[in-house]
Length: 119
Image (cartoon, rainbow, N blue to C red; front, side, top):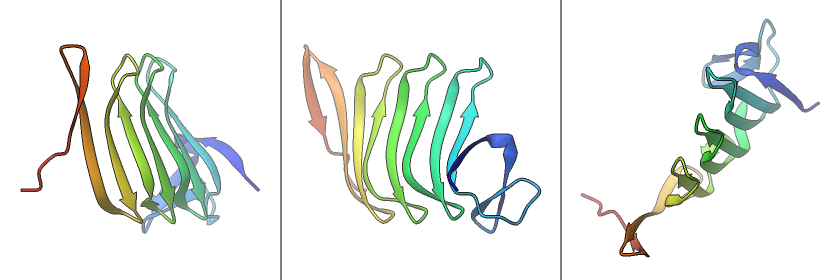
């Protein structure tokens, strides 16, 4: 059964997330709030591992990061945003392996796409 719980209602052991005071692996949505009460994190879990949409939010409520997970590994597109909601960079993953990374910067009103070098 899928459910929504707060950060305090879970515990982590051996890389897996369980429901508090049980040995039951968590399946559902985990929510963690900022001190001001705004939602800070929403993460979907399946059998104790992140699986599905993972979202982080700035304290002002704007989306900070959106990523996809499968079997506890980042998989697919990850996007990051500034406090005004402007896209700042993207990454593409394949089951935890980083395939591509792009950063977006404002320059004379145009958006430049930069691919960080691998040093």
